[in-house]
Structure formats: structure tokens, C-alpha cells
Image (tube, rainbow, N blue to C red):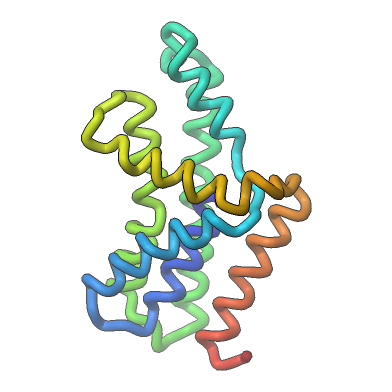
Length: 165
């Protein structure tokens, strides 16, 4: 899933707790659960391949275009999460932010592994690939259906926690 979805969903899920450790756990667990659901994502396999095979890819415009795209995605996620906080005055802001951070942490660790190839964080990439291939890669939805899936999940989580379902 894109970062916006991870940020919003993990933040909303933890918005009613007071427990920071539970908020962190919600963020991490929700990340992997959400990645198993068919969704649209960036072309990360291609990005990973280019980092590993193209000499000095980090110095090329393509790398920085991807960084800008991912940064814009994260900013959009936190911006929409701020809107949620504005709409839900009962939301606990600190656990919400902690959960949102931990909700995207596995993707940050994966990116760090691609750049550094540090073996002690390789477990995350292995787990990510396993979870993605459980369901998501078998169906591999396109942009439209994969984006609709993410929007629907955000809406359902929002409605459930607001008492609408």
C-alpha cells in the first residue's frame, strides 16, 4: 500500500488508545495486514532492482523523483490524518502519531535495506515479500481497483471507529 493508506489507517486504529506501546504495535501489525490485501503500489520491485543494479542510481534524477513521490505521499498521509484529528476531537493525538509512524516504519526499513544491504534488517524485506505474495501479488490489481481498495479500507476503518458501522 502507499504510505498515505498506512498512515491514515494505523493512525485511526490507534486514535482511541492511551497506550503508546499498543499504538506502536497497532502500527506495525496493521502495516503487514494491509500489505496482504490486494492494493495498488508504486513500482517498488523496479525501484529495488535499479538500486541494486544501476551504478550510481542514487545520484540520478530517477532516484530523486521517487524520493519526492514517496515524500509527497507521506506528507499527504499526515495531512489527511491531521484532518481526521480535526474532525474527531476525542482522538488521542500522541498514540495516533506513534501508530502512524510505526505504520510506515517497515517500508522505511525496507528502503534502508535496499540502500545498505545490512543483513540485520533483511528479515523485514523477507517478511514484506512473503506477505505481499500471499494474496496481493497473486491478484495484482491495477491502479484503479487497487486504489479503490485502499480508499474503501480507509473508509471502513473510519466508519467503524466513528460508530457508523
